[in-house]
Image (tube, rainbow, N blue to C red; front, side):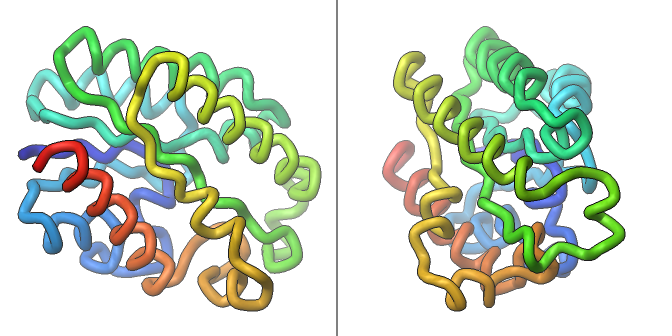
Amino acid sequence: MRVYCLGDSMTYGFGVSRREAWPALVGAATGHEMINAGVNGDATSGMLARFCVDVPRLKPNVAVLMGGCNDIFLTGSDSTARCNIGALVQQALSLAITPVLGFPVPFEPDLIRDDWSLLTDFRSAAEILRQYVAWLRRYAEVFRVPFVDFWGLFAQMPDPRRTSFYLDGLHLTAQGHKMMAHLMAEKLILLFN
């Protein structure tokens, strides 16, 4: 099975090697062909543009869609992310591709580099991200879209255990990617085996 993983730095694997990023780990665990279409710093508008170019050429069976954090960081809102994720799901369905939503992981404002904090108020962004994930959950339920709750995986952990999985407050360590891969592999096995 060919799985197209569309996202931002959390999909790309910012700060870890390509073989340590969760899509590569899922491929090794399941035998599925995992296409890592993550781009560091990308917003959902870039994801939508890449989807329209990549999918006709790559012909995946499944599209894992996870993004929205950079939309929130850059605009202070999740409205664009909501529109674009909805469009991505509908595009996938129209092409007989199974969409799987990935709920973004929470971030840790206290660990984020000071210079990045010049870009946005990460405490406010954390609340917007929480609301966005709640909306993603409702969207998935209404449209019966399979999802993987990466948010819940990390949000439920007590601190300092949770923060030990972060490189910089936004991006995960190799161990964090292993946890994501385990959850995604379980979902793909449940859905397709």
